Image 1 (cartoon, rainbow, N blue to C red):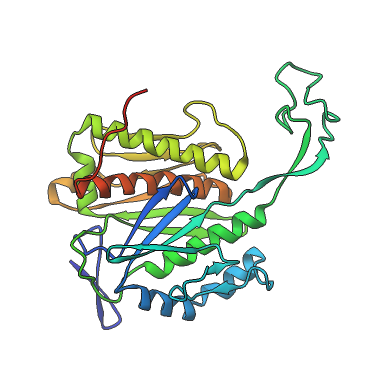
Image 2 (cartoon, rainbow, N blue to C red):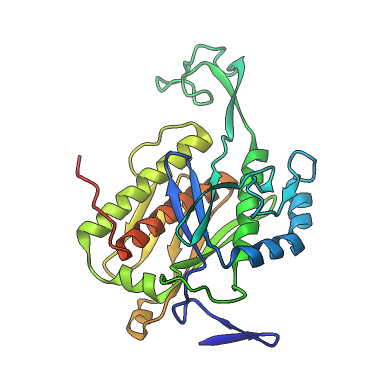
Length: 314
């Protein structure tokens, strides 16, 4: 099924499968999300980035309008692009150019002693240690500017990738189309999920699904550790896949998560579904949830290509 925009008919991913124009996966070695953009799509993606009116809006909204953080739209130059070089090119893979977005370090040590505990790392009121420095005795600050720089770059790239100008010749189907909202005080993540991915979610594969969920949890923990420098307790980051096909991701916050929202009745009609977030309050949560979803999509892509193997139980 198609939707008309002006005089152009646009295919809708939740209504039919479309040849893949980009993929996502998590790269633990680089601690970042990898965008794989089909070689036939890179030119129109770059052209849209050059003409995007959102660049100026985001620069002003998020304070990214200085020289250091200037926006580079040139995906094909072989150099870093995005705000302040947030998007880095890596070696191509098959029919796809690849770009990695290394995650930022938001919580940083200043080199000074913690003013709350005077450098002792202890708390006089209870035995859990100083909450502010987490028993290190050192002072930390939150550099949210780094979080905005990276998340805003990702948001612009996702926005540009929506509604492709033409279908690629890829033999794979697009699994999901992600959207990001990054403003000074508002954040969000959503996705259109393809019929191919919905079918995968709805077919019972307990061992496969459990392995993919565990990988997503591990990768969300890696992302959170990189951003905030804190090891998480078990189940602070979670990925869930119920028997009825509902997919969800949760990270630390006030019930912060990212879930499928549509009725499962769509499966019987070979349709896709949508995903939306709940209580995303800052860039770190946004990037952590994306890490989990990108990890899951990467696992599904490997499964569909016949290269996925279940992680051994510890």
